[in-house]
Length: 75
Image 1 (cartoon, rainbow, N blue to C red):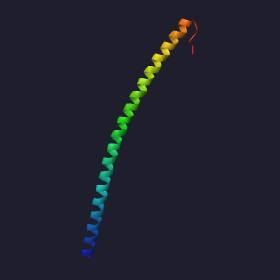
Image 2: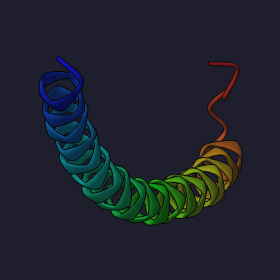
Image 3: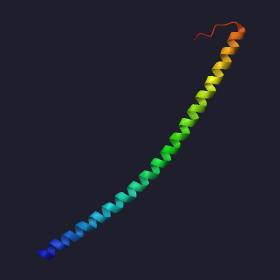
Image 4: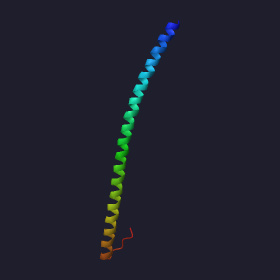
């Protein structure tokens, strides 16, 4: 009986070690994906801020053109 129990224990420990290795690899992969997504998010946020700044500048220029032409720019 002891031999059977030890054999089962060895098998279960082996399975747990395999699961642990698999999960460790998954965690590493997910951490890498997270780093890449954070970098992409930072780039997209920067691009959005730059575009917002450009749109603000364009709006200011258009308002100045409208004021010079005598048209109200209360939009």
